[in-house]
Length: 187
Ligand SMILES: [Zn+2]
Image 1 (spheres, rainbow, N blue to C red):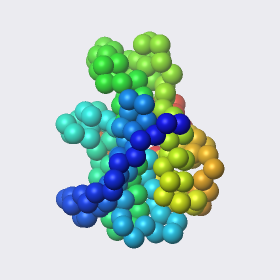
Image 2: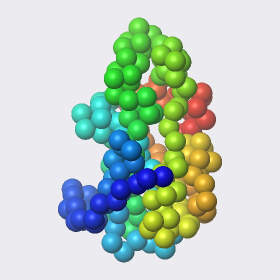
Image 3: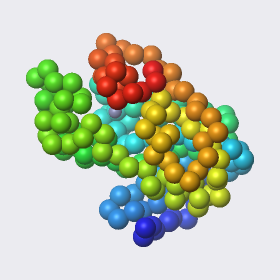
Image 4: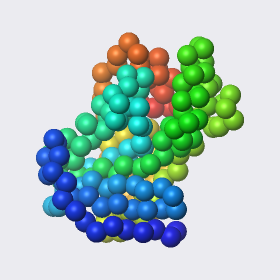
């Protein structure tokens, strides 16, 4: 992998003070948000970009709530959030909005992705192993409800799965149920 790595910088945030470092992988630029005194076996959240949720506050998904929960927990536990730029489960923003348009006609999130010719989840996690090794982290507690993520992170010992528990709303309840029923998420 040809990865370009930034300097470390301070990032004061509404969740407290963090350090940040960017990792550039081909055209994708990822951000690692972490505490200076990283725990020996830190709680790590691997968050995939969701512009509509993270930045706009969309209620179609639970991404922003999960991100904020992860940042708070990272702050409290000397942990890390790895923010991966794989928008729309890695189909990109334009395709994600096309999938949303199909959802407006009654398809669910998995059916919409399939209709556009994509798998239900196109994300990959090789860069996560690279980043954790860069920080000399060999053991983590992984903050996730997604069993695929546990299996996809190789060469790193996941000593514990820490669940993220979010409250559903009327807009995302169907989406959360699909995640649980068709994508194996532990909700
Ligand atoms: Zn989202």
